[in-house]
Image (cartoon, rainbow, N blue to C red; front, top):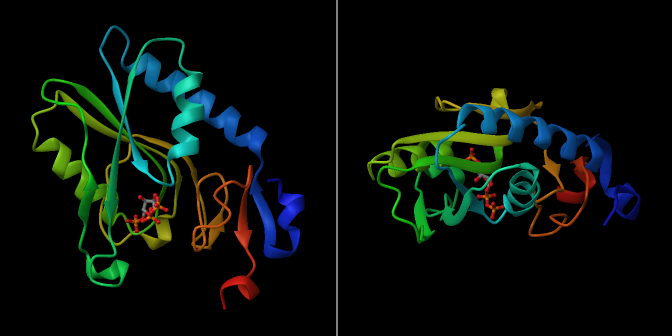
Amino acid sequence: MDAADVQDDLVNVLFTEEQIHARLKELAAQIEADYEGQDLLIVGVLRGAVMVMADLARSFGRHLEMDWMAVTSYGSGTKSSGVVRILKDLDTDISGRHVVIVDEIIDTGLTLSWLTSNLASRSPASVEICTLLRKPEALTMPVDVKYVGWDIPNEFVVGYGLDYRERYRNLRDIGTLAPHVYS
Ligand code: PRP
């Protein structure tokens, strides 16, 4: 689905599909250089990171492994509850492995902060984070992020994996959702 298909629902297009692909290529090149000669496992955080994982992984000119985790931060009803639970764990033993967690957005930082500590406790060689988007104004806890596509304002964004009530994930671009959709 293109932005034109849902244009009445968007205030603007923040990043086009072309811009996203170009930025992911840059991030992949950066990661590739940093892990030269080393084994690499990238871990996608379901469900939003599916698109980022697919395009990022294919931008690499080397072998890597992919695995997935699903977590929820809505355990007690709201995200601010601070409760994170694992819904689907890794299939991979990460001890001694270099791991890069891949997500599409860091909002409060709760999910990635928790996930990084969780994976770090499994004795990996290293754990880093790659996120396409980050909202610095929304952060409520420090998260050490090595690879960031873009910092964005604290607005409701959808597309390229990002949803509002499970819709818009299949939008090719990333746009700001119009308030009339969610208010
Ligand atoms: C999104 C996103 C991150 C998390 C970031 O996932 O994929 O994992 O929220 O928010 P935080 O920094 O405030 O923790 P979400 O819980 O919406 O699930 P989804 O990936 O299935 O859409």
